[in-house]
Image (cartoon, rainbow, N blue to C red; front, side, top):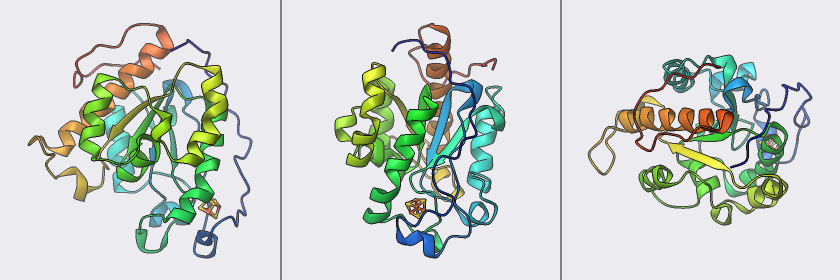
Length: 234
Ligand code: SF4
């Protein structure tokens, strides 16, 4: 991957605050816009805003978001030092998964945010985000693949992302994606198919994302063994 200077933080709105491009506009309270990856270069991408995010317009503030904050803090990365986004920006009723039409309407906006922010690493949190970027399959299998190589094969990504991210790939050699399980209590306490707790694999994937982002910023080679904590000075 080529070394790039991080873009300065730009508060230009990343889309219309009154978007009506899919039916979720009828049930949302506020659109939750992506935030800049900041000094860490990491953009965490989840599925959709939850109830608290819908009311406040701020992403990743519920229990699952706090869990991610604590995992990042273990590497010296404060909440203000990594970015957050979702596959869709408006809350689906009852926290259901976004449907096909909603993803097709909102993923081009996510691609535009990634083009603008140029994050060093995408941390894909949970099955919906993992599938959008890495294609169908078990999250566990995508986790293992990312440990062999985190370079995303955009040929398997949702077509709205493929099309939207093409200009980025003209500018750099690839897009680094690190998948991890959802940080909700329900998902976090389960076991993966190799018997590991999802919480252990999730913490290791955060460490992997931090190492790759650090390597991209400094030009160092990331350590090949996942799961070893590393402090990132940002
Ligand atoms: S989910 Fe996305 S496309 Fe749908 S209304 Fe909200 S911002 Fe617009």
